[in-house]
Image (cartoon, rainbow, N blue to C red; front, side):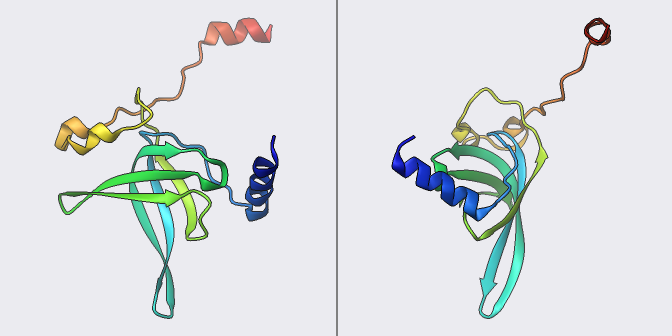
Length: 130
């Protein structure tokens, strides 16, 4: 690891943020700290992750949602102090890393199949336990 990567790793550890594992296609709820004048509040932004950019401290992800029939996208810095928490609501089963094609889709064609948990074969488990 070079010096810059070491410094970024130390900075990420110092921030102490626990961001759950998520991937493009997952539906997430991002809680964002919003400052309006002197008031602070937490705003929930729920949508589908269409892109993820892994660059250490500069990592970011883009979330797309439909608001009043109009598509809205917002890019969040993963380690930003404005993000209170990220919660994964649903896992999506997609074959692409960037889901920009969802911008041209609407309605049922924009749906993403849910990734179901792996089923465990009972005979294989019994054989390994014995």
